Length: 155
Image (tube, rainbow, N blue to C red):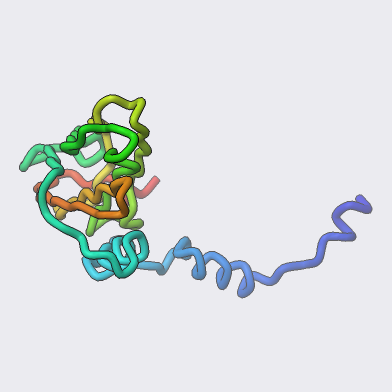
């Protein structure tokens, strides 16, 4: 067992400190706060102005089970080399991690439309941010009521 002899011992305290730094410690908050979602959006867009419009987000207003919530995003764009959607980012204010999905597009995508299933931890607002080829950002949001939470089950 010479391999194990060369591995430095790590204390329980050091291990929990590393887990806490990544938000994985057992005592870390189960849900993000709206301020954390705002910070994640601000990290994406920087100082750029985020405008409303050009983007539609559809999700059911009432969800029985947060384990698989269907949503769709449609961004109005001609999808030409000069004017196209580069990416769409979804943020959930109440999930353990606010950033829940990123999709990338090119002019060859034809349309900037996506449909996906996401997990939602609780009733919350979902934000969709579209990054355009000209450097602009567009946003919209929608709220949903989740009756059975996901992301927080005990096993």
